[in-house]
Image 1 (cartoon, rainbow, N blue to C red):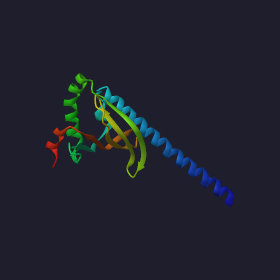
Image 2: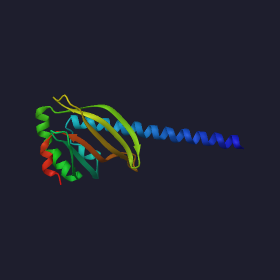
Image 3: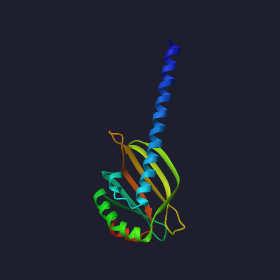
Length: 156
């Protein structure tokens, strides 16, 4: 009897581990889809975000200090829409490296380094992605570092 219970316990553990691995892989695939959509200026970008996502732009000041600027999804989408036309003209894209996926309390944290087109530096970024009841994924939190000082006017 103990042997049978042990086998069931091991199988349950392995199945749970596989489920977590599948969700982590799915979260990374979702991130890659987001990157592809963003780099092609897709109008589907708003669909990647939860309506009440926490959006953080972490401004890297010239002296290296960091200032967090918070906004809501609605405001961010308006800013994004305004910026997309200019980005398309400039052929602006982001390249990502060192992508990692970590299980967190409210989903999966996908962290990476981001390099804007034409720059030599890399900036930190992360998204917390949450699997929805229907199986889709949504960004519920995003932090992206930027050297664009204009964001400081929104700091509180």
